[in-house]
Image (cartoon, rainbow, N blue to C red; front, side, top):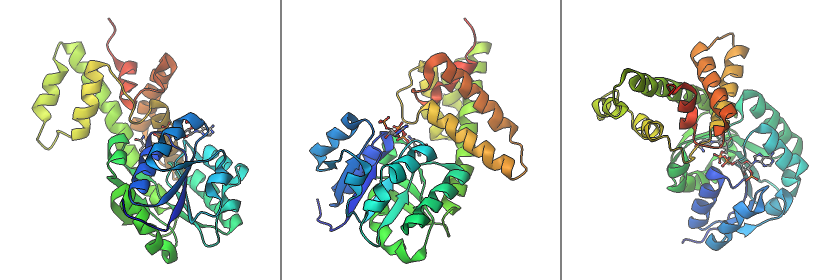
Length: 292
Ligand SMILES: NC(=O)c1ccc[n+]([C@@H]2O[C@H](COP(=O)([O-])OP(=O)(O)OC[C@H]3O[C@@H](n4cnc5c(N)ncnc54)[C@H](OP(=O)(O)O)[C@@H]3O)[C@@H](O)[C@H]2O)c1
């Protein structure tokens, strides 16, 4: 472990936040963690993190606060209600990595402004395993002046950083990539379902596309989960549904009608209503699985 003088508060130690905190610790930073359910943050103490009882305690005098919480409401509650922003050191920076959509981003940027805290809109691409391996793709946007200070943090959590311009650009690109992800999952679920319905072994489908231009590694991974009907969570169906809503809201606000994403969102609703919300997003298959 290298030594580093940076102190960073990580608010949210779910699947992504816990993995990111571990990589920040491995990079030698002082990491304080807070999570609503404290027990989920406590294992990070073994890696050297200080576990705080409140967002304010985690952020007290810190150089950075990094939010990795479910949605915009949760983030706003932690940084404002939880007094995290007012507790930060002077000239500190807020790295907002949760996926919150355009309205969420605007709301959070407004809160940062009110506290005079520099705000980086920085959603990430990649799921549980890339987060654990420090291999996320970092979609950074915000003021140029703090870019250099943020880079060691992004290097610790990610394998590549794209600086995209003023805050908001990261969120817009994230919505575009989420359109792709939600769409793939919906089509993949229907493809596996049709294979089952036709008496075609869906493993054969994955086999014939593997390695060629159609054979996304992502399709192999999620397709296998659908075939086995085992859905250990890398990214929950609940949060994928939230992301579908953020995409649809952004589309509507720009006069677009994304009927494929609407259909995928309806499949997610069905899977969630059947009790699969906390399972991996591949559980969307449950909505389209052939009867019997
Ligand atoms: N997993 C992925 O593949 C992935 C990839 C890129 C981006 N993201 C985005 O990253 C964010 C976090 O995702 P994740 O997969 O890490 O989710 P997760 O494991 O479900 O963690 C969610 C976090 O939000 C907290 N939370 C939820 N509702 C809350 C509330 N009402 N009040 C306070 N805290 C609350 C949870 O606290 P508790 O532990 O107390 O429930 C936990 O810290 C989301 O915006 C997601 O869309 C996820």
